[in-house]
Amino acid sequence: MVDDTWSSALHRLWQAASRAEEVSALADDVYAPLLATPGVHLVVGTRWEDPQILRYMRALRAGSDSPVITATARSVPEAAVREPGDEPVVTRIPVAGLDDAGWPEAELLRRTPGATFVVCTFRLDHRGWASLGVGVDASADVAAVEGRLAQAVDVIVACHTGIIQRGREARRGADDALLAEASLQMDSSLDVEETLRRVARIAVPAVAEGALVHLLRSEGPEFVAATHVSVQHRRALEEIGRENPWLAALLARRGEDEDTVFLSGPELDGSPFADTAEATEATEATEGDGDGARPGAAGGDRHSTVISVSTLRARDRVVGSITFVYQRPEARLPDKAFLRSLATRAALSIDNALLYELRRHAVLSLQEHLLPSQLPVTDQWDLSASYEVGDPMLDVGGDFYDAVTRPDGSIALLIGDVCGRGAEAAALTGLARHTLRTLLEQGTDPGTALSRLNRALRQERASRFLTAVVTTLAPRADGTALLTTCSAGHPSPLVLRSDGTVSEVLTGGLLLGVLDDVSYESHEELIGPDDTVVLFTDGLTESREAGGAFFESILPVRLAALRGFDAAHIAESLTQQAKAYRASGQDDIALLVARWTGVPPGADLLPHPLQLVRTAR
View 1 (cartoon, one colour):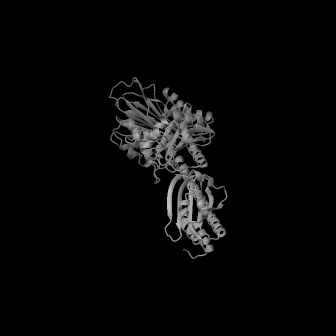
View 2: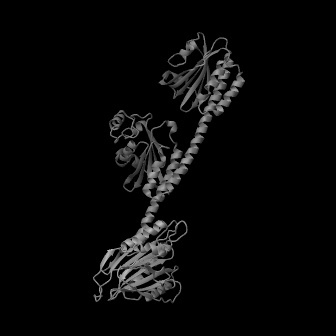
């Protein structure tokens, strides 16, 4: 029994309501003051789902400190007539007139003969309703009791509304955080398959228990990724995504429909997600071996399966779809607005990855056409090349190289770098390589070849300059070879001697395409058997580590460590070392390596029969 007046009790009830996380937490603050009202001997409340499903009943009798709580989920069909509308309804009913079929409270109320049941029924939300009532005797002021019931119900409804609102705000905040994290995760990769896997992983289990992602191809949906909170069910989802005709037909029917659709119950009949007895038996039969269990089948799951399908649309075209599988209460299902937002972000990330992939293939394909597919080689020369694209997303680079045989039996090596990237750089790359190649094949000396290329660039009014170096390697009767080098502003070649020492070929000359009449001087030196000449672009030397040091500072040491290796190994090793070394810089790296194997004194120095070997790119 509580001595507080009703007004102070009501004040405490409002305070409790502002803090409550569940309506049931208000029970003590509601029941005790009502029971303290003169003439009230019993307070009883019920909670209903839909019109007729009784979830629980709670009762407290005068003189007792322990409430009677009945937790149930039984159907009471006759109670459907009690379901209120939008406004609370207060009713007085003699206890003797209560029918047990529609009034589960009747059994408790009959313990006090001649009592009247004063009950207020009210709606909490769209899913159900509730009642709060008191059993009173003849001494009660029924009108006052009705007023107190109505006030208590006002607090309960306000509390429930506040809890729902706070839950929505919390969920909205969580959804926004999830969407932001999803965008960061999905945008952090430009690999198509990795992006698709991230789309599936991000949503599970935060959004759903399972997810499948399909790309839209010209021949129809193509499965690419699936995940599930259960490893066993993930395997089953992958099989469904690849082979299930029901899901394939569903995705095909969806077409370009942008609205997210939810399917459950009979709509899933015939699907691998159907909650049927057959599905339950199939699940139970396969749980032992870990394969083949149906994700979402009824066996062992508390909640019926629901699936949603969202179209992935970006830049006015459909790129695919994402299917979520849920085994959770209806209240925890995401709304369509959230799924549309997630699908939009996923679609943009996937489309960006697809566009990047197309761009990358186009850049690499064009880059390959600007480089020789084969290098000449005889038993006198070991030739190899390496090319590493700095960043395929930027555009076609301007690095080029080539090797050609000359009428006198020598071989000419050339390497160059056009300023900038893109279509214009690619056009100049093609012009420069093919001009030098043609001139050198005809026997033109390196200096003259560079001068004539410079003249051609000036005549074409080229808006970009370029650097290049040309080296001819001519065998001599004593087993050495004459190295003749001309440079037009390009990094100097290096020579790795057979004893492990490294020297720089000192050359100098003006950039190509800057002035009209330019001449280039040649530098000559001899190389011996097993000496190796290395030509490269500045992408190699300007690879920079986090501390600011350039790879150029350690290049001689790294090259010396490769003594005794063939040309292919040297070219690939230096490229990969520079790539691993740099923390900044995205310039392309081109290398052309020639190792002189030597000829015995007096050997025939006429051109040997040539082979063509594919270059390493």
